[in-house]
Amino acid sequence: MIKITHAAGHALVTPGKQSPDGYKEWQVTSEIVKLVMLELENYERVIQKRIDDSTGKSDIPLKKRCELINGWGANVHIDYHLNAYGSGWNNAGGTETYTYTTKPKEAAALAEKIQTNLVKELGFRNRGIKAADFQMVRETKMTAILIEFAFMTNHNEAIKMRTEEYQKKAAKSVVDGLVAQYGLKKKPAVSSTVDVVYRIQVGAFSDIDNAKSLVEELKAKGYQAIIV
Image (cartoon, rainbow, N blue to C red; front, top):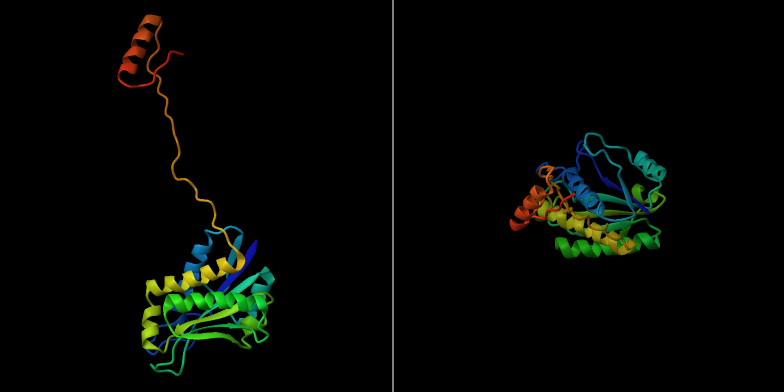
């Protein structure tokens, strides 16, 4: 069994954390979190939990988030973000994925897989795997990575990341990375068709010849009929 936690990095109400035209980071990252979790429901041995406020109405402090993740006993944590440079539109752009400064082996391997997928799917500049002293990868006690999908201050990237198409590409990249890293297997397909047989009793006869006559009549019309 693998326990995975997810968190959209900043809430809808967090000051700043938005594109120059006022579109909040959370509006994108929350959708990606939901898509990832929905797809992971199709896999065996996966238990998952969303750590941030899924309504976006409160920004759970980072210390509290780490406590929740550690207390739940997660094996993997993923933090979802959009990057920014300055406050106006500019050309800074690309995708990057972070581990803690010690570059834990498993975290680095997972980051590499997801980063490779993201660059392929999103088509933004590859800014690589980086290490940083971010609280969400420092104070969590499991494999933890932090993803910066794109720059919300880059007009081209920001507009694309608001679309369902690119959010699905981002989610697919994360899920595929987790599947490859942990050998996740899909749950067996459940058949939607069920063989149902309806039996109908047609009359009761005191005369056996009348019963036999009806049986022959029904058989002649293509029905199965027996006398019981």
